[in-house]
Image (cartoon, rainbow, N blue to C red; front, side, top):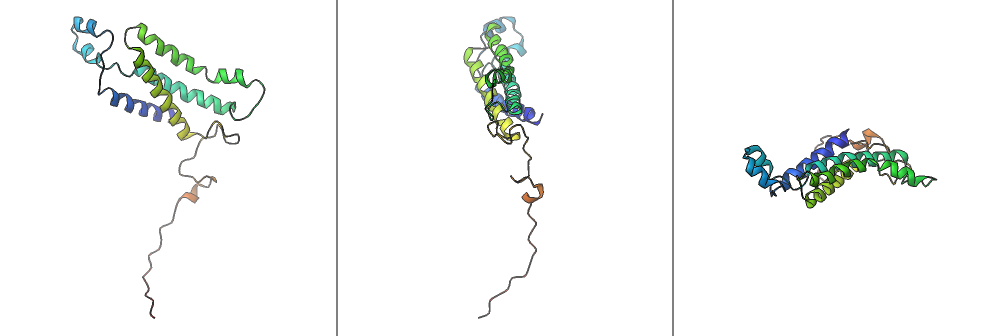
Length: 172
């Protein structure tokens, strides 16, 4: 859940930052003809596609989690290929959502590509921030404990403040 929230926050930051540039939606002329000011304002937010970005961030985290949970990349075994296909199946849903956006005349294909890339990158980053690498044979699928040292002792990462002591001079 933390990975999803962090991925969503990163994606929102990237999307809002890139929307400062603005790009007209393919149906912008129709929006002008209707005259609704809220639709006209939204007509400048085509690049990147938020639907593609948010779907890809969520489904990327779920796909990485399934890959880690099954250990399909870390442990060679029989039937890994069909298992890998099942693990990445959530990305089919996000791809479906992404390719329907140009059909609705809401986005250009470059908007979809940018949103998909942002979602994939932010989802992968958020997953790796909270879980061990899916390539690690021994720890794949395990969450990372923040504030703990690599050996797993949470108290080892904390340092006690040094006691104040008076400075001593060397008398020679």
